[in-house]
Length: 205
Length: 205
DNA sequence: AACACATTAGACCGATCGGTCAAGTCCACC
DNA sequence: GGTGGACTTGACCGATCGGTCTAATGTGTT
Image (cartoon, rainbow over all chains, first blue to last red; front, side, top):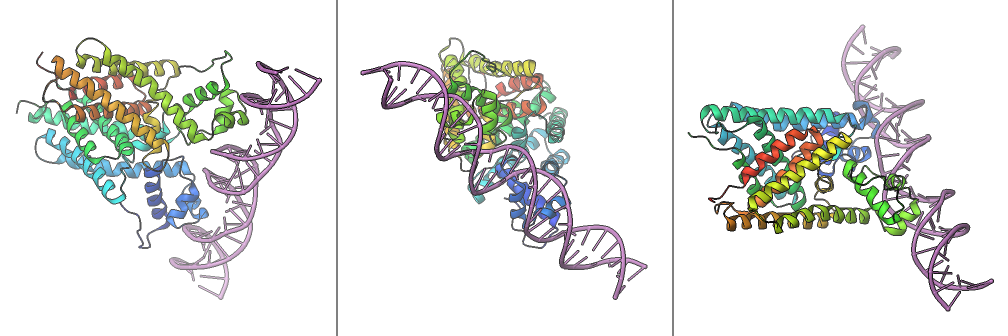
């Protein structure tokens, strides 16, 4: 994982958030109890409820934080130079590299720390559902913007429907997460990433 | 859903299994308790543990049953006539039609009744993990067989790597599940399905 | 009628769930 | 040095968790 064992005495709230991000990524929402999060964070129950009104509120914040990471990478790519289609490819490379890192460090691929929770919480009630919808919509919009940029710079064919293709790319990413989590094979994830790019028809450039 | 409200007096074991398939599909494994399954099935706890040694064993059987459905469709398609690439497309149409049915009947898309559980249970312990790995591997093999058939009948390009592309198709399916569950938009699912087919390069035929 | 056996019934178990609360510690500011 | 508010502490709450167990209730066989 990314940031366990921050032995440095950081703020209590941050320690809770960090522990929760790790645990929810690995085991999901329902399978992790507040007590377990507190244990991992080295914090007592009262402190938890001092900073977070409920477990569900913590979830919202975890999702927001997780999205900040992916969103940052996407926005960086949006402002980067070079053919936009290559920048899309680079995002997939980042995802693959992440899977490889998890596999190397922990022996296990945990998948997307957003998608895993999105899939578990489902379409039911859950206040977090709105958060998740917003995240996926932004994600789609980023991909669509990259595709449109590609159509401008000639790296993506004009025949490509940006919105549909953006959704398809996001679906491939989320599918890589599910397959990675279950089959735990980084090479296969890379193969999927390469195939996924074929959904973006190359331009004439 | 498919088979709730079988008021007909079917066997107790089947009623439990049916209720569990519905509930686990909608709400996942951890979020559903044995008591809830019993209530839905109209059965008392003792009966549950008479037929199933544990909740985890029930999960295995649910997964096996769920896979029987998808597997059946795939094997039918494998033996069907016509260009194999079209048969792959037909599988995606079936998935889309299923999403539309859920959305029409329940107002909500619950996604893949295998993938949802695969994503939740993750790479951790869980005896069911082996079950899930087997299912996904068979699924990949079916797709790969269709692609190879397509290369024989000319509907799929020889440049296509059947194993990699099969994994990519499965990833797209699972991504559709995650996105469908969260965004609940059947039209978008259909758009993704159409884009996903571009991962299978058409042949010369 | 008596027995065996499969199934039903639901009270019960310890553990854990998310969440509350009153008391205590700490530190900044007056 | 006293006061107030932020934070910590952990005991405690009722509900639910997965699972067990004993007793009752068929039901078919002899």
